[in-house]
Length: 350
Image 1 (cartoon, one colour):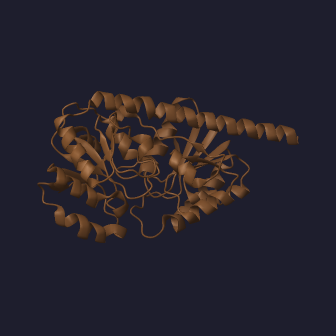
Image 2 (tube, one colour):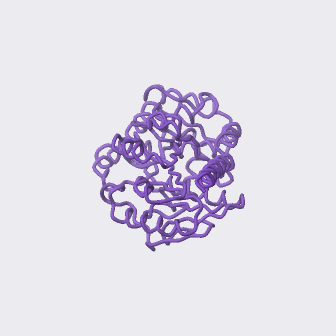
Image 3 (tube, helix red, strand yellow):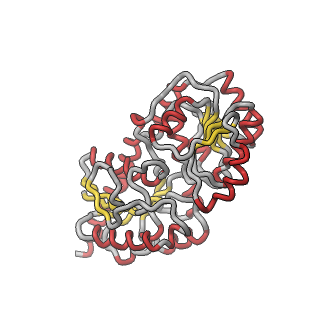
């Protein structure tokens, strides 16, 4: 079995800082290799994932301006990668909407993991190209997609990369894009209501510079609210492992929210607002709490300061439900079923 894993060209695999999709591709690729699967990752020249790599563009390009799905580099890279992959791959696994449109010209089975919220235009596109097997990353996302044959495979993590610390420091954390849908402004409100300092990490993309300047920056005082900039894996570990709790006050239907299980892998509970995948990831009283509003989040933060949850128990919850091994095994099972189905069809035609 030879799998072609096609990543978007903008961020290295694995990412140096921001890049949930690229972290997923890196861990899936290395997990497949560890299981004896022949895998090639189509990415950019800065990638360091420990499998065979091929690229058209040497350098990363992030952040970018404009819609990623209409970007010339994305289309050019995807067309090139698919042309390369059809020569020797048994199955092609894409991770963007652009690749879906080429499926009508490709004989190999195609899998597409959906990493983003389902806007109406994209949902229409996916329903039109129904020869692709879609993998949704939450049950909520599959319900929105409305394609019966789609699979649901939750993301997993290599938990060995994350440090657990039982003794926490007195601060709240937020990690993610500095964007309105991520609710950074609400995290600041939680910190003020709870009276507990907040440390924020994440990149400010050009599209949301005005939001940062008006809704976040005025509150940064280095005391109650601190902004750390972008965080690499080392900084992310440090921030999450020491935090009382990580805040996830999203304002959209989150497709998965990888940072939630990263926090849990560090033994740090998550306080989140409901939306999309959140109730599938956060288990009340076990790995954090799903809250109804900012006031409840602040109250829960104060509660966790007085009555901390067991870091080891939270880590165990992640290991049991969101391990990289479980995710890889589910993808291998899907690949195998698709290839077996193709062989049966080819035999019937012959």
